[in-house]
Amino acid sequence: MLNIDRSFDTWYQAFHPQLTATLVASFGDVGVARDAADEACVRAFERWESVGDMASPNGWAVRVGMNVAKRRLRRRAVEMRILNRSAIDDVAGPAGELWYVVRDLPTRQRQAVALRHVTQMTEAEIADVMGISRGGVSSTLRAAYAALKIELTHEQGQASHA
Image (cartoon, rainbow, N blue to C red; front, top):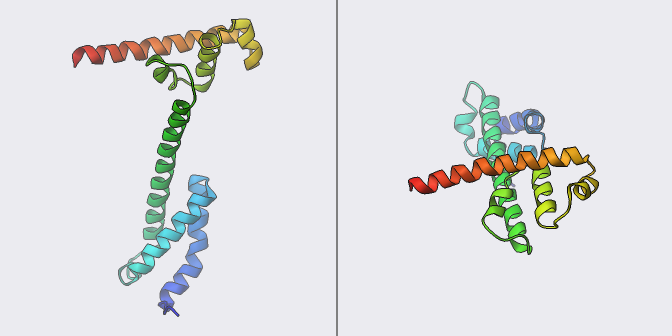
């Protein structure tokens, strides 16, 4: 059996639940918080000679736990962006570079543009599908076109400076 330093064991038993609760409250994700708290405690155990002598082992563990949680959430966000782009690439969808720019529009604008230009729906049909008024469709498309114009103008400007 592993011989755990009793001072670490006492600290762990008292502080691990507090650390987990702090990380859940900070990040809102129970799974990430538990994993980050566990990882922080493992690192504390590995370095207990120095961590146990610190003025605030709790503060050290919270900082480590927060850093671990931030890294995991950032990695999850990147993975989701990659998976979403891959899923779009895997489905036979609209072709052309413009659709790569359309992907970055807010969801409602992206949906309206796709319905209008891929399915060739009228504004009235789009309104019915999206459950909004015809005027809402019109303003959504107008905002999407304005955002696309800005993005495409910006990209064109960068290309001419290259």
